[in-house]
Image 1 (tube, one colour):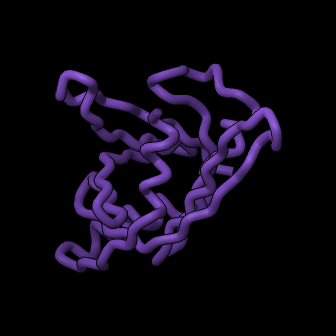
Image 2 (cartoon, helix red, strand yellow):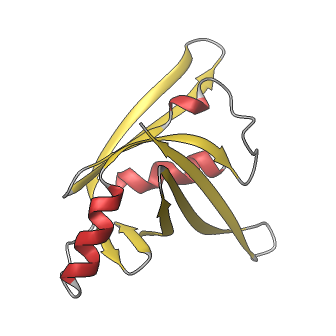
Length: 131
């Protein structure tokens, strides 16, 4: 379910906003690179080999999300979605999708909230490791 939610990340485009250029520049520098999925709050580090191939490539102006899914017929499939992004403080905005983010060393944490079946917000964390 959460992996599907991340597909939305690359499906829409965001606008650039320079309200706080220095903070944004520092955040962009920390984000730039290739980040592979290491764990999620849903399954911990018990990812399948296919899930471990999910990753982001982040540049100064774009974010490309490589999502993965497993099928019995075709094995591990990867889809690519590229978009622009905006940073405001500790928030990463890609189109209409908003994530809280933090970078600590070679670890990127993306947090977002989805509604559960009862309409309550459910927090989901994704931990990525820089390669």
